[in-house]
Length: 234
Length: 224
Image: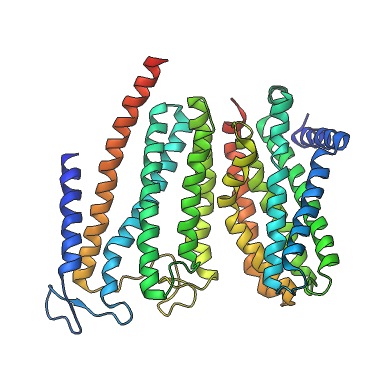
């Protein structure tokens, strides 16, 4: 965990400062210059934060569903603790991805919200997290809460492929990879970044993922203590 | 008893207990009438476009379904018959019986909404491509019932059933709602049948994925 802790702090700090400090240049000469992307310009820097955060949201959701599945198989309450801790973090990252995305959309596409397929997907993910916690608060016993919320997150997981693979192809959108994109539509967007931006982007991905792992570890440990305490008090 | 005959027996039981009180049918029908009347008040003499009408069509279907479809499981909990069902039938039998019952309920609801819309919007709600409309309503009802049946089973175990049901169902149903709204617009605009094929593929995929997933997960919800 020490590696994860300091790694995430170092990487995110580095990406944050480098991503803002490196100047743009119409014809980059060396590693300390970003190319000017027509239409994006200075706003392109947001890709170093927005995309890694959105990525972490999806990772957190998948981890939460995975531990929900493990809970159903083993009935070990510790898996439910992991599942709900990951869902809470996913909700936070989902909110951050929505806010960073909406701000970027305002300055690049003109309005905060356009119902582009990916905006729709993140909205649905927010709703799923909201519904997941609403369901948990409506269930009294620990076992019921764990079982039903695990089932719900897996049912919600069934709809995820439709958003990732189907929706972007049939709906026209503004994000890269949507229908009508000159670069071709598909779930995986081709990386056409300049090498120095790509390195920062990948470091950002790693940094935010490590931050998620660290926070998950903290939350799971807190939740375990609270669970133990609630047992002894009853 | 074989799987089929016990499923059939459970559906018959549900139909009988429904016909005895007509609770769900009356409530759903009144809900449809109320919702359509509200829409008429809001629109007054405006002539809505086909995309607005198809959107409003599925809004009515969605909220009507949300007010009634959870009955299938909630009524078992309220009457205390869940234990009996658990004893006499396997989880998959219960699931498929409830799924078919809900499909029939959703389908009859869409027919009621269609008839009502064709009467009150006689100028603008004209189904020009019937094949698209029929396919959308049938596949849409199947997908609708598949998603709302498993959510109803979950909600029946919770405390705040009424408010929780639409909250849990909406994120799951968004894919379906977006697709059926698009396909209904195509039917109202009189487009060729082939233009709706991608929509039908999504609807079939959604129904199969939802039913398969629910079939595998239902046991965990059903058995306490």
